[in-house]
Image (cartoon, rainbow, N blue to C red; front, side, top):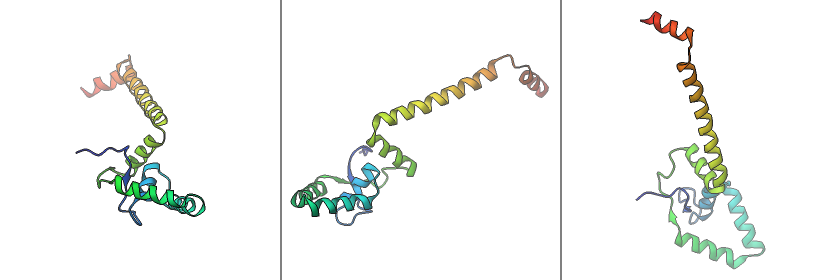
Length: 126
């Protein structure tokens, strides 16, 4: 079974209780401390029973994060970006491919053009 990198998971490695705040942190890319402070603030100030109910529902319904979900830090940051703004991520990937395509076209032009210097070097090597 493959794991979805765009799905919400509980982060049991960084969990204090059930891993909900750590999971939200992993999902959004926001520092876990700020997520926990926001949850405490919301619970204390205005949403006492509802935040606890939402926390309990999330803890019971979400799956634990698979160990090998991300290959490395760059992979994790990429998928957090996908979840935050899929359109921006697609735009960034397209931009990278355009840059690669431009560089390949420059290389192709260099090696396939009538480059007398390159031709002379090749002939000397023969």
